[in-house]
Image (cartoon, one colour):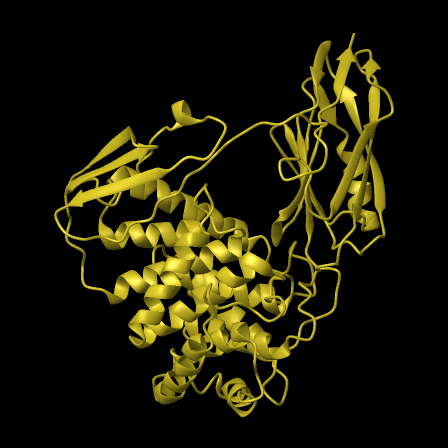
Length: 469
């Protein structure tokens, strides 16, 4: 979905060549075709396309399809049947609740937030106010008793899509603005995709900004929210998780759409470290909105440093800056802020032998344990395949059939495993085999395990040397 937001931006600003636009459209079309494979028999969508479908994931998919329809042609019948399936899951009082199955996204007792999200998704995909009236009535009847900014932000976004509810939306907007904290808005618990902490704060702040921008109200709160989103962006241009990134991009696009077209500006931006010139960027009409990099490696010395930025531009501008550091540490570094292993996931991978001959098979054993609170998130294992080895896929099929893993993918030299949510202090272990195909002396590539909706909770697995004679 981030590709959709990027394509929308490129088309709006005209900031890309036809070749770049074609490439961006190709990415979106590929994503569209891939999403279709997750449609469950009988309607709706699930993690792996198996029945029964999941309400939250179906609503999320509907939002994606609605955004795709703005930039590429998609099947209108897909939107119609997905809307119809969601409406069929609505309870008589207007609520939505999640199905309970191995392929569900577990949203706990967040029925109010789920109902708000599904209502927003339906309206985003073209549903009429009449079609969502039972759910809207439920949301408004129970609004006063809600104190979670995340749930309220979802209600706000749904209200903005119903013109007759504008006054209700404005009242809720004022309430949310009054509840803004130092870092924007944050959920009281977790979001519907189990985000908490910084990812949860980004999701909630983005949803509030999205609603305020749609109403064209509270410009100071929008500005503050946008600034908080920009502060939270990672060094690689993401916001922690896919969902947080998507919502942040939606909010930034909405903020841009409400403003007059920006005029280009020119000038220079100079950077110095400890008073010494470190670099200069020339800003032209063609590069005023392009990210620029300045290498500061010659200033990397032990101790404190002062980085100064001076902008001489033809008109005042708000722009963001980041200082990014990349470093490498030994695998056996003791626990600490620079250690390669952080979070509450423990993963071990061992091989029953490290010296083989061609056509031998080696058994890899993987053990995972969650030492902290269970989040309900899928766990992804990205295992490096040693050079010269091939994975015995029949072992993986057996693990999938047994329910130990939910899905596996072979992507080049990586084996990606999707595992059901882990329970606290309940380790799981499984084995799979690899076949040695030709003589080689090499190490297994580094491997990573992380929670899908909380990727900061990750662990890296050290490589193991292997020899095939």
